[in-house]
Length: 123
Image 1: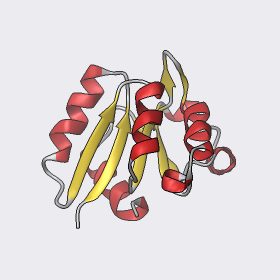
Image 2: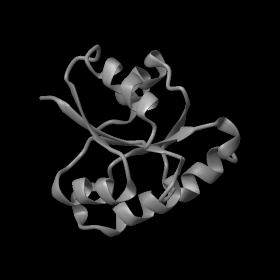
Image 3: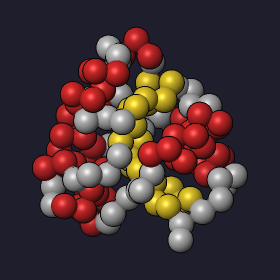
Image 4: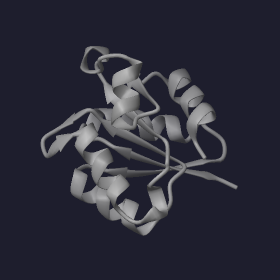
């Protein structure tokens, strides 16, 4: 069975990287959202095995979006989430845990780090 992953990022370049990587990872399908609104809509309609969220987007930060997703029905209330961004955006493991993120990926996302994150965290 294929794992379904939601990637939320407003960057066209980063989304192109992720789309290129997606075709190289077996048993994984990606959905993409360019805004918080799109991500919330998708999360209210379907279950994901992992959610990747850009730390800083024009319509808010990753922490606010994850909180909004968690407030939806039970579909993705416990879905692991990984923030994507600059390591200096994250104040350590304790900060990520307090905000509900399992981990973070440095941007630009490295293929092998993405593959490892999917193996470790996706449901």
